[in-house]
Image (cartoon, rainbow, N blue to C red; front, side, top):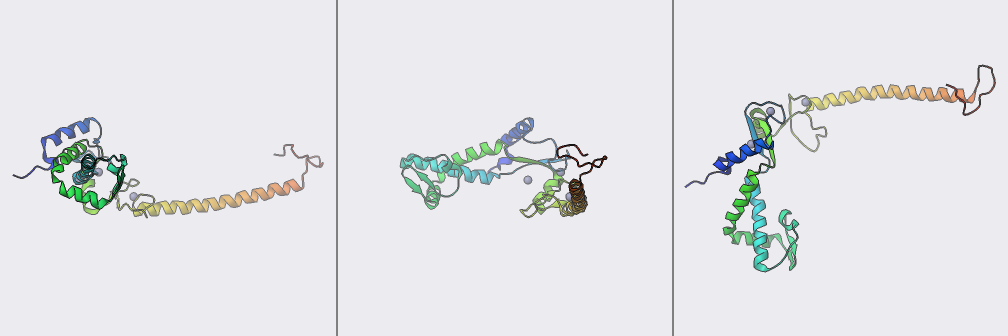
Length: 213
Ligand SMILES: [Zn+2]
Ligand SMILES: [Zn+2]
Ligand SMILES: [Zn+2]
């Protein structure tokens, strides 16, 4: 008997319907706005939910068996964790998890609950989803035409074409700004020159604090 995948079940279809009603699944592509063949995509895989929950279930079971308490963050962080009976290394937790495969049922129950909650989903159309999964690229939010690879070096989060455009705009702005700076400095010079030879139309020195504009 082959087990059904979490996304092949009736429960999944029902949960999906609810998520649509709740707006967790969008009614158009988050990138291009298309409504054509939308494919809501879990950002956290079922496998990742399984791992998270297996840790959770194991630590709780371990704490009951060994009679210790632990801070809540132990369930969500990775690696070892401290307890009322001392620090537990990640290796020891791993061994416990391996020795207790029977906890997998409970884990699966929780993971399915998380998965069917549709809390971390991205709604893309079939085109955007295709490019994302095959080429790992996002649609450029600026031109909405080209695709870019998200990376920590891509500060603008746009395609390379748009990156160039933004840089050109910045250059143009720099040129304009430099002209403006020259104008401002010239104006200051002139203002200072006028100050040092304060003259009123009558030829008498102008007093500080009076308007001379
Ligand atoms: Zn799209
Ligand atoms: Zn997908
Ligand atoms: Zn672009």
